[in-house]
Length: 285
Image 1 (cartoon, helix red, strand yellow):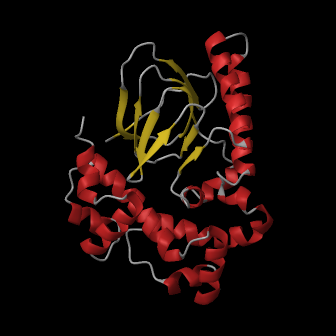
Image 2 (tube, rainbow, N blue to C red):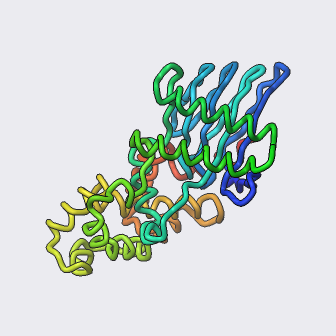
């Protein structure tokens, strides 16, 4: 498995567009990889398979698939597949910087992969936009990059409206004061994930009792404090597995897990595979 660095091809925007038209009977495989960008594909013809979350997602003509950022995945495009591929980073507000993992965690609340089936209202809306993006990319007329940027923002608006995609601040805009209240807790977890984090310490940070903190955090993030702490730890563990030769026991200890068995259990719960298997996948070609 490898971390893919996307070379944006739309000027002045964090967007990559590809318009594929396979004119022969080849099967094109992109092996296991991940990237920070959200990936969306509109399949016009033929068939496509995506592997992620220990599942296989099958696309038929007209389907659209959304893969969230940082999700390891593998794709196979079959004979004469024609599709529009869009990879992009949502624009973030300055206030989101306090929640580098929290907002990402909210977006990952579901599996992070969704197929928008052909024939649905949302599919028709996004399909029209994707077609326009493909046309602009192919024609490359004057200001085509601005049109593509605008169309991408239209897609983002649709995803936010349908609650498919959400940022912590935007999803909880009516509870801004409460979100700001737990910001020091989130910041502390993000910076001290490798230590033993006690609930009493977290509650002291914002001067509330432990029960109130647990209830507030659950309301705002839809997850418990322990789930979020484990999530941050697993994110760091994934990077150590992919980018270092450290022993799995060392990684377990460096990311704050109390035992290797618990680390393996939490890791598999998030990724569907063990830490050892996760690391070995990068060697599969």
